[in-house]
Amino acid sequence: MPTTANAPGGPGRPGPGPVKDLSVLHLVQPVEGGVARVVTDLVRDQLRSGFRVTVACPEGGPLSTELSRLGARVCPWPATRSPGPALLGETLRAARLIRRVRPDVIHAHSAKAGVAARLAARGSVPTVFQPHAWSFEAVGGITALLSRSWERAAVRWTSRVVCVSEGERATGQRAGVLASFAVVPNGVDLDHYRAPDEAPAATDAPLVVCVGRLCRQKGQDVLLHAWHDVHRAVPGAHLVLVGDGPDLAALRAAAPGSVSLIGAVTDTAAWYRAADLVVLPSRWEGMALAPLEAMACGRPVVVTDVGGSAESLAPGHAPLCLVPPDDPGALARAMTHLLLDAPLRTGLARQGHEHVTTTHDVRQTAQSIAEVYRDVAALQRSEHREPISQ
Image (cartoon, rainbow, N blue to C red; front, side, top):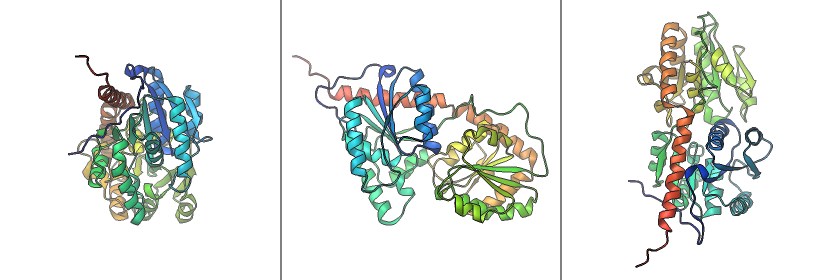
């Protein structure tokens, strides 16, 4: 059974008021991709709900720009993505921010922010950590060992670990992270990601779209290997990779003429709606947003069986839409099967859309996170209430 690690409060610290009046400090790095979209959607809802929200993140990226546009208080927090000598300075800057903001709850997003926030607060403020996929899945050897050891030790300063899937929680537990967990599945802005009025007409040149950061985690290299077999079976098919990242040059060099790399776009919804099939061949995930967004746009998906991918699919879709990671042959077979069967794609798309709209509404995600805040704030109050006079 997981143990509960509750954060003690500092002496004389006033107890937080109702949830809608809570002061929340989000500490965030990275500031692009899925993490940025999760934070943006969450902050948007929290501002509407009356939270006092401060976001600390590196300047100059799309996250700080969008949050400022929404009216959130954004504080610069220079921080790199990777661990290293800069961590000491990043932690000291986080500690100064915590003293200045005096939040009721800290919400740290992803590994780097999770390290800095918990070292800086050390239990003085209720701290929620959301890994957005565990850092030890991305590395190997001594680095993975150190990462697992840190996460096990950091439980003492973590009021709650928020996982986006049961798969992500199970991965943490297998690594020995015996925390107090809350599973809050990712949600989609259903007002923005919505299906068009009409299904796409069947064509001899189906379009496959992959949306994601161009990096080893997302597995676009596996997709390119699989694409050779797909294109032989469906000669007119075209693949579009949407996104930017460190693997851009290598992927571009490996891509045949039937593949286009278009870089990052401000709005992915149009690409989902243009697709006949959306694919995300990740090597590890908590629960990726791209397949949920694609299903919300009424498109069928193929994903790899990592983290919470199986949980994100509609019931009964796994045999057709879920393949092992790092297996180009299995990926090619699944894609080819769906590309050659337009009625099957239409049925999967309809069922996927119904699934996402009923179980992955971002408003429900925000409500569940608010309940986590309520719980950790109440635990702090109960642990530090005044003694009853006899």
